[in-house]
Image 1 (cartoon, rainbow over the protein chains, first blue to last red):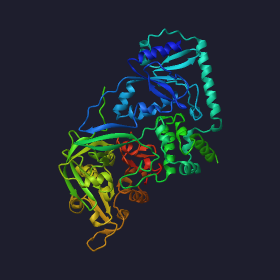
Image 2 (spheres, rainbow over the protein chains, first blue to last red):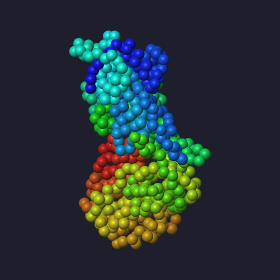
Image 3 (tube, rainbow over the protein chains, first blue to last red):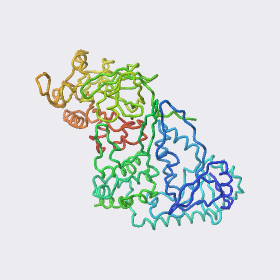
Image 4 (spheres, rainbow over the protein chains, first blue to last red):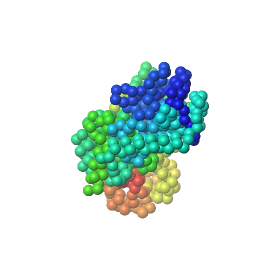
Length: 341
Length: 276
């Protein structure tokens, strides 16, 4: 919508002032990575760098939460909050979750409420991780849409791009002394962005592919790579599902109460043998490699057919977390080699 | 604006439990207010605190006071259901999914092929068809079960439905019978599909039963000249949410809960793992 710039220190001061009254979550360092924390007293907050270890879905659908009860419990609207420093891969992931939980005929009311009450402040990913591969999807490591506000670094200033009227309103509330953006500023931002993409290209040089991932997966059939990675290497730890910002599958657990029940909705994993098992014990995917393949088919074929893009944003959390040391990029490269014969 | 919670069940009273066969009971529940379903759609029934499972109603969609489901005792929830007495309060969500497209069946010969507890959705469909019998041509209802004792709706199958109308013909078979009590046909259900006396080109077939039965019945129907788009299959999968959210019931790019459970063979024949 519009571009502005402001001194980085002034931006941070204004955010921390707002954080006295509003729930604002920003990134802080933890171990090797970044995690979200609720901002209160002024502390170090990371505006750019890379995506956090935890996927953004943690803010919108929880690992396990009460979802229904008998007798019925009234549903509470979620509190308003702001997420600061959301990277492009996580913003893109919300498109998939929105399709499932927010835009269909049946809306998930908690997701709907949390989404509507969350302001998203994105920021450019200036330091991609060794496992990041958004570029291999033809995506970018800086947000281009799906944000209310986006930040890009400009020396000692931040460039502010508003994406929605809601973003404009929030910016006005910050009472900042905003300066106009010059062509030199835009050129600098674009030059910086090309630099981040170069880093990603270097990281992923050995995983370049000719065909789109969707086509590779669609043509893979019973390729040997599925068995190598899915049967021999996958230890079914489900880290790829749990860390994935687009994975949204869940199960219900009904627990008895004195006079009724409580129903919990918990993340589930398509790698689990029980995932598709029916009451009779029959399951369409007996072997681990078939379930491993299904995980790819769902992201790169089925959802791509419906949504028009891969339900994988290249955040690399599945590679980072995998106990079997499976690199999704390598799996897809091997599949491409195999289908090319 | 707060949204309705689609995971919240209605509370319904269990009115009657009918023992159909050693493994299968039919549960009659009071229908919630303004509850309507169409033949082929499914509901989620929960035993409070125990769990929820998907079932396709077996009662007539025109019956608005109650809803019936026939349940085989095979898993955790179904085992608990089988132990329940009338008066128990159950949870119910739905109806979900697509129904049988009766408007496409008009003026056609209709073949129903069911096996075991797969007769449940077909009963609901059959009752819908006979409700407006004048709209359809001949109806052939082919039913199979493992043994004579395993048949459900015995009174209907053997006594009421064969006399319902000259347009309706029942064909009944059992896989095996160890004594002389059974005078009817013995053999798998595909055997009842020979000499159908239907105009195949102007006919639709509806199949519901265990996966292996659905598979061989479909192949037999293709052999008989049925086109894939005229073969309707009621697919079974692990439908958890019923709304297209949870992803447990995927068949390729389809979700059984939203895009099914009624599919034509044409729609799903190229998807993987369909005969689970």
